[in-house]
Image (cartoon, rainbow, N blue to C red; front, side, top):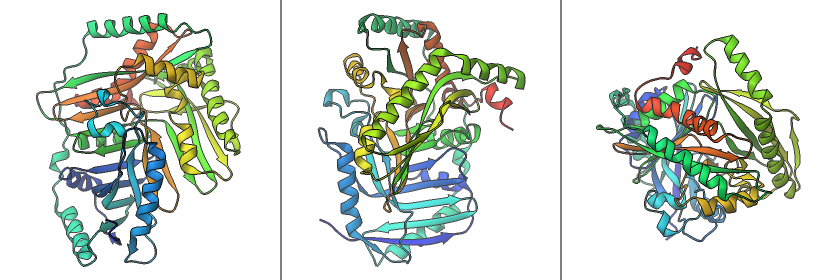
Length: 444
């Protein structure tokens, strides 16, 4: 039944983010999106409708058609059109079989929803967009939500120190042996590199508070995306440096992010590590391969591409990366282009298509939302998606953490195992209620 959807936009007084997060704790379905070094935060509460993803269907086509259908049902009660309204959520990495769905459950096929309440906070400016199926009640619903927002206590967001059970040295040794075994099976001379998923489960005697975790990551890592998707299955959190796509009419921006080296404890050591990063031939080649793959995909859509010849430096609180922003201009069909860009090259390998086939053979478990495009699609055709790296799914007293592992002839397995463990550290230390020393030293 295609009922009309009524939309109402109102302005709110300046309210602290802590209160917005505290109120979100009371909602089963919610979403947060903040781009790197951006003072705009999008928060969504409740679902008026969810996208009907089904196994075997193209998820990009499904979302496109659903957005078109929803747009026909909108009735705006406040001029101008609430162009900030958006669908929010995440695609899945793959359309997996039912046998792989036990952990991710309904999230295995992706999850997007139309929020009941959307808050757009830009500095002290705050807008509230309310969606409802009841025109007579929408004003009251909007006022009631605004009242709850001002009255809620933020005590629930106090950071908690957890005693976290994590993988033992034996389990890490087992993982390294598995990589060695996989490397022996990857015998094709054309296959230069495969990106595999490494995950482990951290547990605690007390419940993890995902909103407090998200907030702490936001405070200590301002140069990354900070995204949270809360559902009945659990809460997916990603603190990723990787832009998948930012788009508007006739323009799409993406980026290549590779390389992985820690921050120094002093400015001198920091610069020495930066020099080492830009001198690493394997990382530089990996960066070239990712840029080449992205350019090839964009060129197939007949777009004009601009990007720097040499990578830039992307510095986060705990790690440094090679970074090449890419802009493509021209006419394109958005969802078809996004389909072709997924999965991000950094999560496939080289050559891209052959590496993806190898991953399907080697990985027995679904990647679910890990490495998937997640973000928002506004109804005016603009939006932004990040690639869900450095992520975790929080379920009560357990949290499963995810990171990528590069398997390549040029990379020593022991070094790559250490690099993978390093990628876990910011999120793992937040779970423990600690902030890594590298983060503290660069927090000013």
